[in-house]
Image (cartoon, rainbow, N blue to C red; front, top):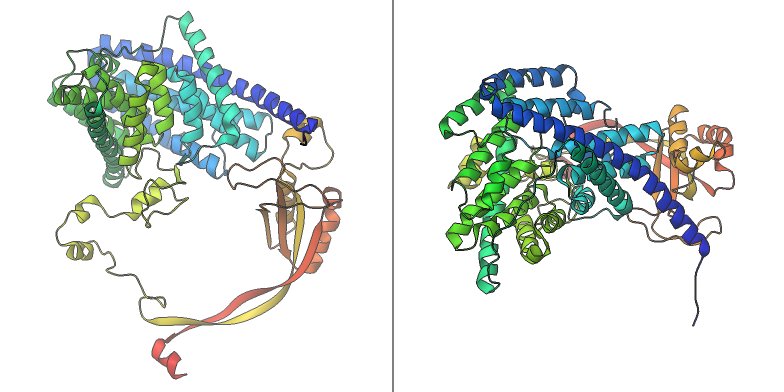
Amino acid sequence: MSFHWDPREQVRTGRFLLKWTVLASLVGVLAGAASAVFLLALSWATATRTATPWLLYLLPVGGLLIGVFYHYWGKECEGGNNLLLEEIHKPGAGVPGKMGPTILLATVATHLFGGSAGREGTAVQMGGGLAAWLGRLLSLDRPHTRILLMAGISAGFGSVFGTPLAGMVFGLEVLAVGRLRYDALIPCLVGSVVGDWTCSGVCSLWGVHHTHYVVQGMPDVDVWLVLKVLLASLAFALASVLFAELTAGLHRLFKKCIPWAPGRPLVGGLIVIGLTWLAGTRDYLGLGVPIIVQSFHPEGVAAWAFLWKLVFTAVTLGSGFKGGEVTPLFFIGAALGCTLGFVLGVPPGFMAALGFVAVFAGAANTPLACTVMGIELFGARYGVFLGIACCTCYIWSGHRGIYLSQRLDTPKTDDPDVAVEATLGHVRRAQEPLVLNLYPFARFGRRLLGRPMKPLSKHGESGMKQEARIEVHKLGLVRIYMRNHDRRPGGTWIKRTFGRPLYQELIDQAREMGLMSATAKATYYGFTNHGESTTTFHPDTGFQDVNIYVELVAPREMLEAFLAHAAGMVADRVVLFDEVEHWAPAQHHAVSESDAAAA
C-alpha cells in the first residue's frame, strides 16, 4: 500500500481559495449594496405609483425618455443580460462601466410610471457591471475577469431575491444549457452569500425586507399527485415558451415598424394604458407582488391573471422598457399554478409554489437553480415536487428561453438538427416559424416565404463547380509550449499572480510585429520540457497546470526576429520550427459539370 501526497497541492489550493474569497467578497459587497439601493428605490417607485394613480398616463413619456436615454447615451448597454453572457463566453470589448447606473435608473422609471417588469435583470446587470469594473481596476486577465463576472451574476441574483444558494447555482448554470461551470464554484458561492448578507443588512436599516411566501396546504403524496404535477408542468412549460416567444416577437415587430428606437417604448406605453383599461384593474402593473402572495391563499386569484400578466410584461419589455423578466415569471407561474390547483383538485397554494419556480426554470433553462430557490423560499418538504416540476418544465420548454445568448452544451433531446455550442438565438432562427409548421401545404408555404425546397448540390445551385489555380508560398511555423497559467517573467507580485497570461502577451506582440497568424491552442494530456504529465483538459473549465502552445505563422525571417525580441519571455521554453506552404487561390473560373466531365 502506498500513500501519495504533495503538500504543494494544498498550498496552491489554499492560495486559490484565499484569492477568490477576497475577490468574490469584494464583488458581493458591491453587488449587495447596489441591490439594496435598487430595492429601496423600487419600493419608493411602487409606493409613489400606488399613491399617485395618474402617473400611469405619463408612461408613454417615461418610455420616450428611457428610449432617448439608451439610444443616445447607453446604446452599448442595450444587450443587458445577454451582453454579460456573451462577454463570459467570448471576451471582447468588455462590459461598459455605466451599465449598472443606466439599468438602475431605467428600471426605476419603468416601475414608477407603471410598466410591467421585474428586478432580476437589473440586479444581475449591476452585479456584472461592478465585477467588470473591479476586474479593470485590478488589471485582471480575461480568465480571471470571466470568473469574476460569474460571481457578479450570482451576487446580484442572490442578493435581490434573498436566496444565496440559488444565486450561486444560477451563476454556474445560466451560461449554457445543460452544463455547470465548476471553475467558478467558490467565487459564485462567496459572491452570492456576501451579496445577500450585505443587501439584507442595508435594507433592514431602512425597513425594506424580502417578500416571504407561505404555502398553505400539502396534499397527500400518491401516484395521482405525481401525475397531476407532471400535467401541470406541461402547462408551465407552455407558459414559459409563450412568454419568451411573445416578448422576442414583439421586440422584432416594434423594431421593424418603428425604426426610431425611442419611439418604441412610447408606443408600448400607450398599449399598456389600453391594456389596463381593457383589464379593468391595475394589478398587472409593476412587479405584481400582492397578486403573487394572493396566489398562495386558498381563495386564489382570477383564472386568467397569468395570461394578463404575460401580455402586459411582453409588451413592456418587447417595446423597450427596462427591467427583469423573473418576477413577472414568478407572477405567471404562481397565478397559473393557483388556477391549475382548482382544476386538478390540488391545494392551490401548493401548485402555486410549483409554478412560481417551474415557469422560470423553463424560461431561463436553469432547473437546478430554480429547485434550490424553491427549497429556500418554501421549505425542504416541497423539495421533491419542486424538482419534478422544474426539471420537467425545463425539458418540455425545448430549446427556447429568455436569454438568447445562452450556449447549447447538452441538447435536451436527441434531435440531430440541434447544433451543440450554438446559442439559443441561432437555434431559434434555424427553426421554421409556427405558422409555417402548422400550414397544411408546407411546400406552398415555403415557396411563399422564399425558402429552399431542398438542399443545394455540393457544386452549388447552378450545377457549376469551381476550379482554382493555386499559388504556393513557403512560410515558417513556430510552436512555443507553456502552461496556461504562466505569466510574463519579472514585474511585481501582483502582475505575476493576476497579470495577463504569457500566451496573450506573445500573441499581442506577434500582432504588433506583423506576423501572419498567432493562436493559442490547448493540449489534452502530456508533458513538456521534461515536466510532469498534465491532467486532462476541458475546453471550457480548464485547469491551472494544463499545457498549451502558441502557434505562429510568418516568413522565417520574421519569426527569427520575433523570437529574438521575445527572448526574455520564451527562455527555457520548448520552441519548435517547421516549414509549411501557404496556398493562395490565384484565379477562379466556373465550369459546368458536363464540361468538366468532357475534359
